[in-house]
Image (cartoon, rainbow, N blue to C red; front, side):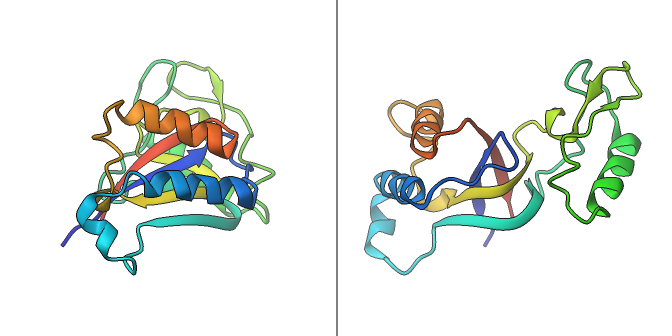
Length: 165
């Protein structure tokens, strides 16, 4: 059976929330759990992932190479070159904000500034929720309300990443 996850990744790739903020967010997300899933306490459905360096949180089967945020052009070859460069650095955290001129329109952008269409984001931290067990999308107020509450609780703006495995 395939799984669907929704990840909340801070827009600042180096941001890691305080443990009290993570706990408050877990409490909030628990209120959105589907009623049948509430009876199975052992099912992992929320994870606060904290890495030692910048990672690309991506949509697995949903992931596509991002496009230029300015002109929406395909920049696959350029993106692959820059990813190779970043990933071969001792610390990606120090290089992730490096700006380069994109080949399509000449604008200078860093990798996090590209258009990932909710299928990719860079960070050291992600709140990962199993969407099959949650009412994240189908709340009365909608997904935007959930995003706003998560941002308030984590004390930072977030990108969302849909992941399908």
